[in-house]
Length: 206
Image 1 (cartoon, helix red, strand yellow):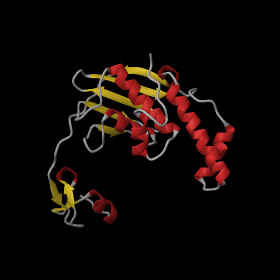
Image 2 (tube, rainbow, N blue to C red; image 1 turned 90 degrees about the horizontal axis):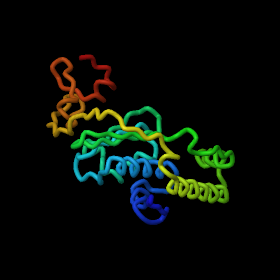
Image 3 (cartoon, rainbow, N blue to C red; image 1 turned 135 degrees about the vertical axis):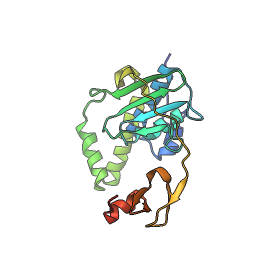
Image 4 (cartoon, rainbow, N blue to C red; image 1 turned 30 degrees about the vertical axis):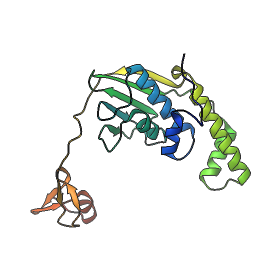
């Protein structure tokens, strides 16, 4: 039997604590992470045992990090800016990978919700409308947490194109701004070392 998750208890609350608030996007990421881990039969990664790839920088990406243990800092969390609610998880040891992508028909369009959302984003919502929007958010979030994975996502096994594990690279000093920079990201300009921002800001050419 599939586990039920409540807004205010269980593993989802860890995602909310990290992200800062309850929202449908966070629930999508949480459900995606849980689905991928169940299909791969893996647990949260303390190190680089798993590799996550997210195709959006929306709220769900935070839930992927919290739930899978794949993070930017460990180097096993990769962002591909494709603008899709799509998430992949790779089991390095078994060389298996799964991908889920939100179905286009996962949600019914709700004009009232969309109108409220626009007002909130533009700071035009009254206190009453703001409270109503938050109620909508909680209801939509709970529906996502209660939904079957197959109704939310297209689920597929994919080819495990596994990049190497993160390397520890020494830092050098940019001769233009004086800031420490990873050696492999310094550019040589007329015999001097330049970080990428200095190359861009000063129109430097190597």
